[in-house]
Image (cartoon, rainbow, N blue to C red; front, side):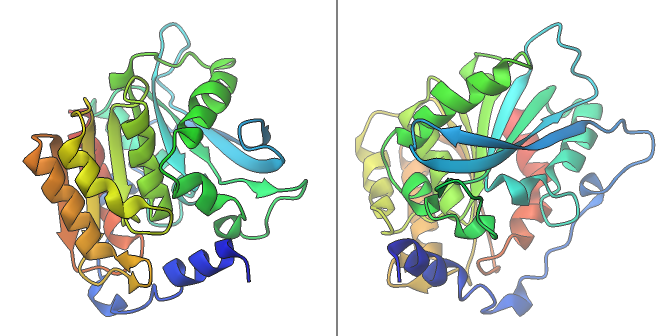
Length: 286
């Protein structure tokens, strides 16, 4: 069994533990509302990376109705894009964006939803099982940020005007995608200043357990961070997710970061993060 498969089974396998406590429900901002104009989603679009050579992936682009191309829009990147762009599941980002942009509770924002890479020419049957996911998301280097900054966002920018202001650039993900979002902003605060991490894997899959110490000891980055986790999240050979997220939150508090930590009773699912997403976005873009 490959390392990627071991990581996937260890992280995603026990997701149903204590699921009975994970009873969060979606609110009105996650539902279609009468009179709210609907943006459009373009994709999926296949992309072959040069930063992660010999990989292929898909991405989608959400364009709000209010975007007219006359001025640059804010931009928000989502890891495991297939999950966040889906309007029938927990996050429903295009629906939430429609509602919050319409109400003026976040800026006009282009959403970029990108999946992890798969080696070879064929896409994986299940995007969660893309064989380069852990290498891209769990590593603490700047490689994934370079993929976004030097490759994917310039490609999207050929069609849409994206703001170059890092305070108008946000990034979001869940599990390994959550630590990837934090790492991108940590490594490149000149590009990303806003982070949402759902059930973030700040554990020792590829060294992410060191973040509490790094946050406490290194120079403070000009970033705003929203963390979400639950008391019934994973506990396995890579670490304890609830403890890890609490340690990251404590380190952010110690150094005076602009942060918010929502700690519930959920397990390693997307229910709590989905229910919180409208409020998280309002807080992030305030």
